[in-house]
Image 1 (cartoon, helix red, strand yellow):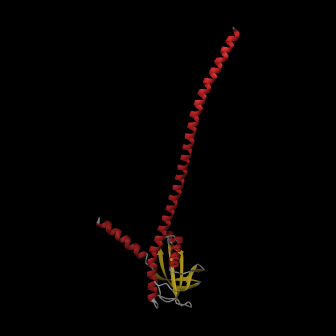
Image 2: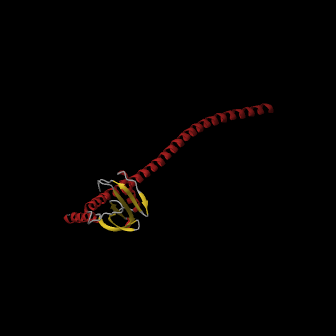
Image 3: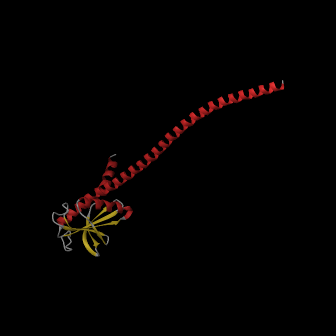
Length: 209
């Protein structure tokens, strides 16, 4: 049992380490820039949507150009109290994962680096590390939304069958009532026909006399 919990702890630690953001160099608008990158264990579409939503909630409006999104002259308190130009890029990673890149410029293409701007770089690292939870929650929200949609479809199909059953039961009741009425009418008509035939036979008998 002790070894089991140790193995679980090792998996958690490994998962935590692989999720850490690191300083890298990446191409933004055809130029190599210092940036921060983090691998997200979510598909490209999910990660992209989650990042857009997170920055949109902070009041940032993106402009996409050459595969990168830029936010010019913005304040993102988690990274800087001063205005910055923020650049983000999301690329597909292995095994249905994705890589998020974030670069910061203090204006006029004055991009920050881990050496000269360690505070800003550390803030970006912290921001992306916290973004892992946002991406995971967005994936969970999508699953919940899909599950709710499936439930709604099933409930509509169920209600359709219930309505059809109710309609058929009403028709069945009406048919049974009509069948009973027809049975009574047939019995009455049979008696009337038999009486009329008897009368005919009696008339024929008198004629032969």
